[in-house]
Length: 309
Image (cartoon, rainbow, N blue to C red; front, side, top):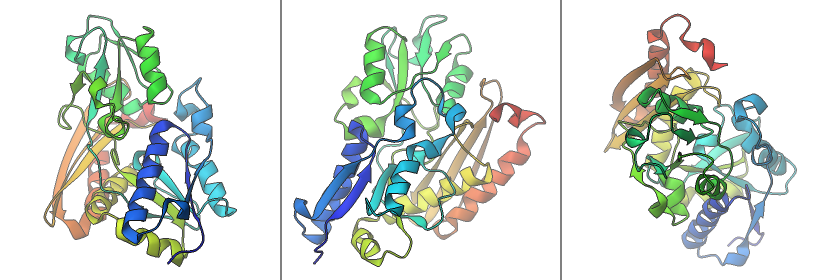
């Protein structure tokens, strides 16, 4: 029986707190522990504070994790709960991804005011998103649309949408589900028509390497199938040196012990894209993702990656 309170670090947004609460609740159920055995510690990150420019210009994905990782180093928290799609492929020394919660829906949704679907927006309508992947996919679908930088948490983006700053925006269905807000979506887009971010829908737990107490606590809530999918997707991302500067999409699926993966790379303007598909044994997940990344990089024409940095 655990005696010390486990301190769970998280960003302070409503969605991040919902993910940390889900992690706590799963640990309570797995070990028969009371709520008092855990403390959720909200920590402000650079990514949350910087709202006036794209994350790529400010330093990339690590802006959502740096302060949480520093808190783990100095003992203020024991674990950090993250959205997997926010995690860099290379973690700081001494830290590891030690558990994945069962994956939620991977799909993106469109939330429109001028029209319910991107295809039905009027000529020149404004779509707001901070994701370079979503920006590139929207531009590929509708080159005539004006795509604007749209930072902020879910509630902030919906408020800006209602204020008429843009005619539509895009969010992950997983986040809306966790907030009981799926009803705001006007169109749920398929992974085939609008491929998701690598890691989308999956919550991961980061901890200190060698912390056996934490590892033993997390083991019962670690979802094997999600871990296999993420091993493939993160290997694909790593092979392409993926960051917030890079429009990359992809999704690994499991059918028993067979894994299938589809990946997409795009120019930021959406005018050129390449797609790849691979499959194999689940035990080879990381190798499948890495090979797919190397193969799609080789497919790209000269100059394709120039706009990525």
